[in-house]
Image (cartoon, rainbow, N blue to C red; front, side, top):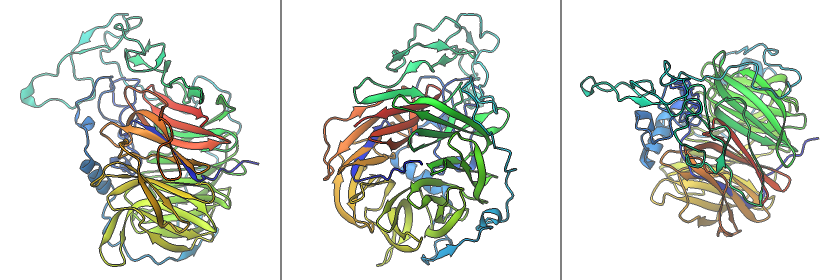
Length: 561
């Protein structure tokens, strides 16, 4: 029997230096072992699927057009542009009706044409294979060396430029400047993990003569840090990541492979030291995003992407596929959260409308309710007395006229009836994160308006604001997932680097019942490139953190507050 964890009062933030994560496919032809900038699903152009082209992956600040620093207004504009016609016909008044979903709905697609999907057995891997050098169903895209004719001679060479993934210069600008290999064999140019900005470890040179960071250490020493490790295998660079916990920690991630393109992987980690346990490669899917939640029988994993729509599969505890559940054509942004009665999925349809669906342990839909008529960002959900709260950045009509473009909170009954929508925070707000201890509810959000910082608010069970606090000079314009321990809140915060969802470090901050900081923040990791897709959950009295890191994989840590 799996343990379901409900996020409780006592807000816990995990904070990290933020930067944007685009589609880290690392298939841009520059041969780098480092991730490309990747955009979170739905927060920009990534809705169209992975961008396998892109900028350079060296350690220096990049100057390609895809690496420009984006200001706050730019972030907002990207969000708005990505989610087409938010004020269009889809913004009809909320009808508050719950739809009874027939058993065949998952096959017919309620909001779209009938979709058969893949063969149900195509992704069934049966027993998870023993841990090996890498997943059997896909070879990670590695790209080519910068100097292919010279790489491998055990000395760093210079060659004509133009192989860094940057667009060619204007015709009158002359040829691109020459490039020098980062390393070649034993020649590391005097670099070490420490000199590159990591905590420690052993630097190596990759087969494409770029620094191999997989043995560099990124977590700081602290008695509260129980374990820290890299989680993904053999240079599989994730583009999307999801974390769920039962009595173990589980990860689902999407990586770009040569055979299958966007490929879904799953792995569990046991014990206080996060020992790798079961591993599965689930085949194609998830170019636009992935979500994961624990169930009594195992897990539900949801993927979304261009051409594949939204698809939910049930997994056993070892990651073997046990069945296909809910599916719909044209779905995009997704979120899964384990609740007492099942798994709540919040998802966006092709027309931009946001729905909440309760799924059983097989991934079949029990009910569905339209929550918001548009979305401009990710969602968060918790269980409260006799129902649920769903927070999302959206645009809603106000009772006195006008529209609220920012974080709104919807209250749903246990049976899925929409009971009301509140706007407990000002407009020009985004990245909501909800947590509860069973009696109190906390919400954190980023304000990109007049006070561009991280904020905290206490809510009642209907989503109305009770008290507010500004969390000081904190990194902003990034999600800050939270947990409650008692009446304290712990938040995982990414330090803003100029692009949303990019951080050069992650830190954990603690706040009391009034939102005041308790003790110094704990910096979890140091990453000279960026951390991305940071996520937070709990196992027992511990916090589990996961993030995409620049050393070509996933960072996973267990922290005892």
